Amino acid sequence: MTAMDINSVQSILRERLREVDERMTSACRRAGRQRAEVTLVAVTKSTTVEVAALLPELGVFDVGENRPQELWHKAAALPSSLRWHMIGHLQRNKIERTLPLVHLVHSVDSLRLLEALEAAAPPTPLQVLLEVNASRESNKHGFAPEQLTALVPKLTELRHVHVKGLMTMAALADDPESSRPTFAEARTLRDGLRQQLAVPHTLEHLSMGMTNDFEIAIEEGATLVRIGSALFGK
Ligand SMILES: *Cc1c(COP(=O)(O)O)cnc(C)c1O
Image 1 (cartoon, protein in one colour):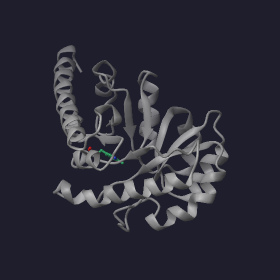
Image 2 (cartoon, rainbow, N blue to C red):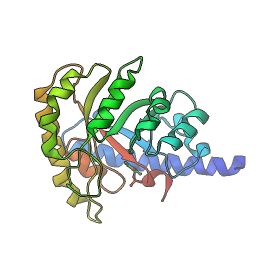
Image 3 (cartoon, rainbow, N blue to C red):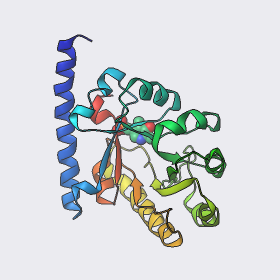
Image 4 (cartoon, helix red, strand yellow):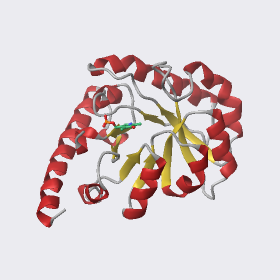
C-alpha cells in the first residue's frame, strides 16, 4: 500500500471505530452500565497485517483471530502491545504454538481441550472462557448448557487454566433482537457457574455480540464484544 492509501484507510477505520464506540456507549447507557465495563475486541480475520497495524494508534489493543495459523502470522508481524484473543476452534496440536501468544482464549469448547490446556501447563496461568452453545445449534462448537454444572468439579481442580467467563454466539439472523434470548441464557449460565466456583475462576466475562448484534449483547451483559466487519468491511 502507498502512503496515501494507508492514510485514507486510517481515516476510514478511525471513523468506523468512532461509530462502533458511540453505539457501544449508547447500548451501555440503555442498560445502565459504564462504557468501561465493555471491551471491544477487533476481529482482524478479514483484514491485512498493514491495516491491523493501524489499531494501536487508534487506541485499540485487543485483537482477535478465529484461526490459530492466522493469529500466529499476525502476532509475529505486529507490535507486542497488542493483546491477542483466540476466538475460534483451537485444535489440540496447535496449543503449544498458540499459548505463548494469547491473552485470552474465548473458545474452549470441549473437556478434551480444557484438559489439554491444563496439561500444557503454561508458565503463567492461562485465562480462558468456556464456549457455550446457548443457541443449541447442532453445527456449533461449545458445551451444551446442560453440561456446565457437571463440569464444576473439573473446573475446581484446574491450576494452570483460570476460567474467566463464558463465550457464546447467537444463531445467524437478520434481526439482532433474535439474539437476545441466547445472550440472556449465557448470562444466566455464567451467573450460576460463578456461584459454584471460587478464585481464580472468577467468571467476570461474557464474550458475546458481533457486528450484527453487539448492542443487544451489551444490553444483556457482554463484557467483550468481538467485532470484525463493522470495522474492516466484509
Ligand atoms: C468473525 C468472527 C467475529 C466477528 O464477526 P463480524 O460479524 O464480522 O463482526 C466474532 N466472533 C467470531 C468467533 C468470529 O469468527
